[in-house]
Image (cartoon, rainbow, N blue to C red; front, side, top):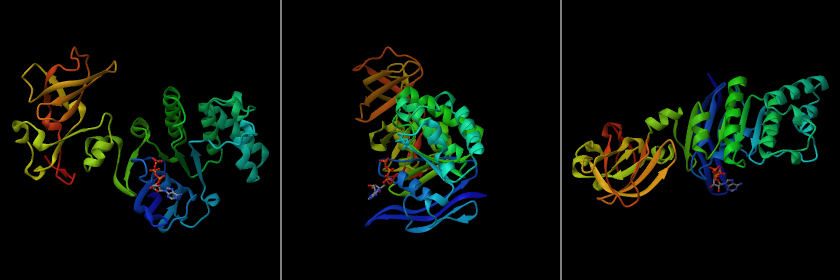
Amino acid sequence: MAYLQLRGIEKFFGEHRAIKGIDLTIHQGEFIVFVGPSGCGKSTLLRLIAGLESIDGGALRLDGRDITDQPSSQRDLAMVFQSYALYPHMSVYENMSFALKLAKVDKQVIDEKVQNAARILNLTQYLQRTPKELSGGQRQRVAIGRAIVRAPKVFLFDEPLSNLDAALRGQTRVEIAKLHRDLGATTIYVTHDQVEAMTLADKVVVLRDGQIEQVGSPLELYDRPANQFVAQFIGTPQMNVLPLDQLPAALQRCAPAAAAGGSIGLRPEAVSVQAPGQGSVNGQVELVEALGAETLLYVRTVEGASLVARLNARTPLVAGDPVSLQVATEQAHWFDPAGRVVPA
Ligand code: ATP
């Protein structure tokens, strides 16, 4: 059953239609991640759900109630921002208890909730400090703690980790995943980060220009993208997309008829290195990125296309070397000239 339901949601900023008739059904306990290029409307959609922006069309229902025009304070949602938005002069304890105090919750109940959240988030020893006495990661945990004590119906996260350095981002990401596993709270999370989207989400919502391109589990989107946009948006490095007319003739003959004039999509792991002259695509190495466990090989083909191969071994190849590649055509995605998927 739908827990949070978006029906034909519209948002205009002046003449600009930022959100274009979004329909989305979210079930209780799901972890939903919004992704998409800068300006596609991720934050706006989150803010519409939070009640921080007014909805110009459509309807929003939460747990059976219409909340389209309800003020933010009555929606029973908690939002965690990139900037933490902590009260600088208050202690961690006061920051976490503030909303409950305003709601005139019993002091002892507040204390239990704050202590419990602090324990979950490993903040117990910092409860008397002020935010400026904490690291970025600890501050973000306080911001999350402030949301937890309210036990909201839905947690909303707007790029919560983007101010943290890479190591802390990784750690905090794992903490958020554990938190979701333990609390099972319905969560909507906006991010730019592919790894966050792929590891945290039950369902990823790919947005583009105010519309939904595809909704699916991370692996559904990776394995069965609905179109070239999703195919190239999900996955790092990006899927290789080569116009069919830049393929060697033997490969062009593998293309389904409906892909005529279109392109082939190959994940970097669908491209491998062969002995000289043995592969179906020949070219020259442009760049080698040795990442330790894997190597990324950037190649310019003799037909003039650029390709990246993901090798799970080290390679003696260096920039400038000739190289022969095999492509796993059974793993290929085919696109028509409009970027729509064509069945193999
Ligand atoms: P980013 O990843 O860069 O944060 P986003 O996907 O979150 O982008 P939004 O911030 O939701 O994108 O913005 C969507 C569109 O609406 C953009 O074109 C943006 O310029 C516009 N927009 C957002 N907020 C406002 C506002 N308050 N006034 C006018 N235009 C706005």
